[in-house]
Image (tube, rainbow, N blue to C red; front, side, top):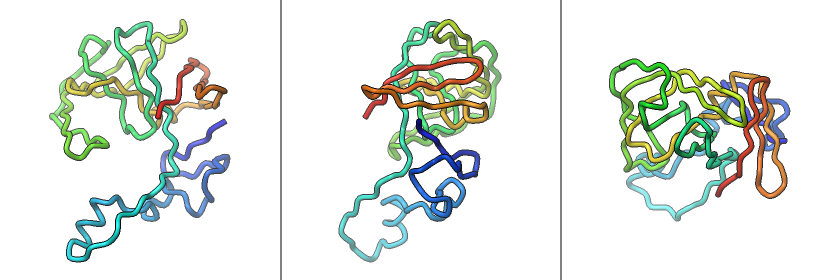
Length: 176
């Protein structure tokens, strides 16, 4: 079973780090990214270093019954994001905004917000606060957003995982 820290609180069942080293509860402890260090130390050169992240990504290419495309469950995404208006059951305009991604040179723009209903394994899940981002390559479900609900995440053999709640059960494959 995999446990994650979320919503600014350390999860006591998480064994990947000690409570006093939790980046979610103490974000100032997180190692700075290379480009942030470069800005601070632009006058000094240093040898490249590698940083390991304690976050574990549960990413899967799920084929949803209700969508004609794949969805990635991403533990780093702050919002659910979908690339077609037709996926939304409710949608409303909002001030356009920039979506930050793992690639700093890639800029995506969100345009609207709404709800998306997904049908998975015979169950319907309604995701609220989904962003309409037409340029996004794959649709994203934010693991952080579904943490508001009581869920269990289990790692299965063969790089598979399950996310189980009262309302749904999702099985997927952990991708590199």
